[in-house]
Amino acid sequence: MKTVASIVTSVLRFVYGFIVGDDWTVAAVVLLALVVTGVLAANRISSLWLVPLVAIVMTAVSLRRSRRAS
Image (cartoon, rainbow, N blue to C red; front, side):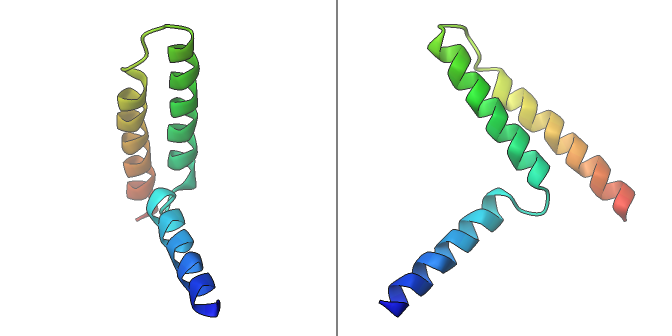
């Protein structure tokens, strides 16, 4: 049982590190964009453009922050 718990813990840490990474704000904003896209789609409003736009903008924001920090 200890081995299973260790594997599960390792996988969860990997997933957290992969999704959130160094900048948790980017992950939070992209998650919010996915939720908004789902709500808009449920109301039959075309929203396929939202997530790619947010991803591009947040990448630029993250790069700008990273550049200032170094």
